[in-house]
Every structure is written in structure tokens, then in C-alpha cells.
Length: 112
Length: 112
Image 1 (cartoon, rainbow over the protein chains, first blue to last red):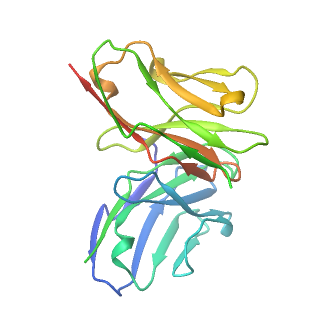
Image 2: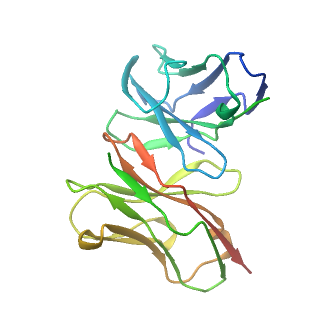
């Protein structure tokens, strides 16, 4: 157990819809990173939030957006869902932005 | 951009066999490298990491990796695998600090 919890665990959405995924970081951690893991691939970095500000972004379009709250929990929002957005979405929390990441078990998103 | 490549997609071994999983990185500057493991149904967890110093790095559960700069490699090894080592293994390189770029992963199946 890492103390990083994600919800929901599974989700099915229709193409064109919007989705919000949630992550509670480990106690004492102020940084959250989000990754997308497509089937048969390694996780791909989406973005990182440090003290409520975006602190780095991967090669993902603007329809992928995020938030971090004062308690350091985080949301990942995806607008205008596409079939290729079907993946496991992983959240990782860090004590500081430049320290080890601890991963949650992920949210499995299926877009139909 | 920094990247890693893992050559073996699926490796099948009998218990007590020796393991070596390949990882090559592409970057000429300061290199930090990681190996992560994802056991079935569990979260990603850090096996070991290399930042500097001794190129032979020891991690958890009897795993080790050797950083060979001249070969741009960071192969993961274990002298004798157990059935409980069945998992997917990912090599990763940070694009910032802990904003990770992962390889595609190697699935290891250990037969009792």
C-alpha cells in the first residue's frame, strides 16, 4: 500500500463525453503526477502539479487538464473523449516535486 | 528528448533461472535511471534507481542493475527468480526530476 488512492477504479464513457478522475495523495506529499498507460505500453507522463500549480507537462493536448487542491489531492479532467483515451490512468504522489513517486492503483477508463 | 527502450516484450523463465532484462537509454548528459515493477493487480513500485556513483545498484527483493555508460545500458538482473517475481518490469528515465519517461515494459512469467 502506498497511501495513494484513486477513484473510481473503473469507468466507461462514450466518445465526446467529459470525465473527471480523482487522486488523494499520500499524507505529507505536496506533489501529484498523472500518467496514462495504454494497453501494452509503459506509462506516459501527462502532467505534474506542485503546490497547486502545473509543474511540467507531457505531450498531451489541452483537453487533458488538471487541478490540485489545497489539501494536495488532485483531479484529471479529459474533455471530448476519444476512443484512444481508453487506458489506465495512474496518479503518483511525491513528498516534494523532486522526490520519489508513489503510485496509486489507477483508474481504468474505457471509451466506447 | 530522453528515452528508454526495452527489447524483450515477454520473458518466460523457470524458477531458479537467472534473469537479465535489457534497457537502453538515449541521452548524452547526466543520466538518472530507474526500474519499476508492477505485480498483477498492484501499483507500480520502485525496484531500484541510479543517480551517480557505483554503477552497480542493488534494489529490493534481490534485484540489481548495472549502469554501463559506454553501452547506454541499465540492465536489470536477478541470479535466481521465484514464481513471485512474475510481473511487468519498466525501465524509466526522468525528463525533469521524477517526471518519468517509461519504456514499453517487459512482462516476466516465472513457471514453478
